[in-house]
Image 1 (cartoon, rainbow, N blue to C red):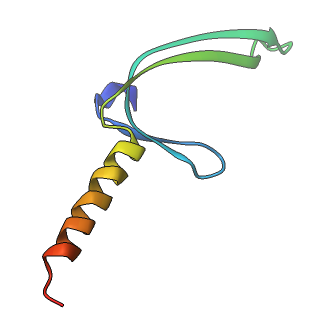
Image 2 (image 1 turned 45 degrees about the vertical axis):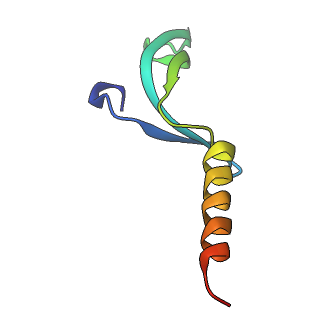
Length: 75
C-alpha cells in the first residue's frame, strides 16, 4: 500500500472511519525468534498523512447543502 503512494481509508475494527491517509513511512523490527530464525514478534510503526477533511466537517457541509436544497424546493 505504501509503495503505491495512494490514499487509503483508515477504518478501525468497529467500523469507525477516520478518513483517507497516505503511508509516509514504515518502520519495523523483529524480535522473539523461533529456533529456525523466524520472528515470533514483528513490531511496526506507521507515519500517516491525512489527505482529506475530517468526516465531521464533510458531513457538516453536506447537511448544510441538503438544508439549502430543501429550502429552495417549492412546497
